Length: 124
Image (cartoon, helix red, strand yellow):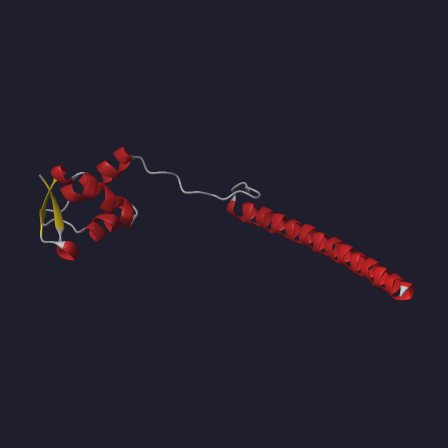
C-alpha cells in the first residue's frame, strides 16, 4: 500500500508541476499579446495623429442639454412642415434616443400633430 501512496504523491507532484508550467506559458503569451496590442495602438496613433490611450475605453463626449435644445430648435425653425423625431435626429446629428427623451421631457415647448410614428413636431 505504501508503494501506491508514494506513486499517488509522485503523480500529484507531476500534475502540480505541469499546471505551474502551463500557467507560466499562458502568462508569457498574455504579455506578448499585450505588447502586440500596444504596438498596434502606436501604429494607429501614428497614422491618425492622435495619441493612443493605452488600456482606456474612449467615450463619447456628453452633449449638454443646452446644445440639444439649440439643435432641436434650429432644426424645427428650418422646417415649416414640422419634423418627426427621426428627422430631427438626422438633421441635428444627435442620437435618436437623446432627441426622443428631450421631446418627451419638454412637451410644452412644441406643437405636435399625429401620433406614434406619424407624430410631427413644430415650434410654438
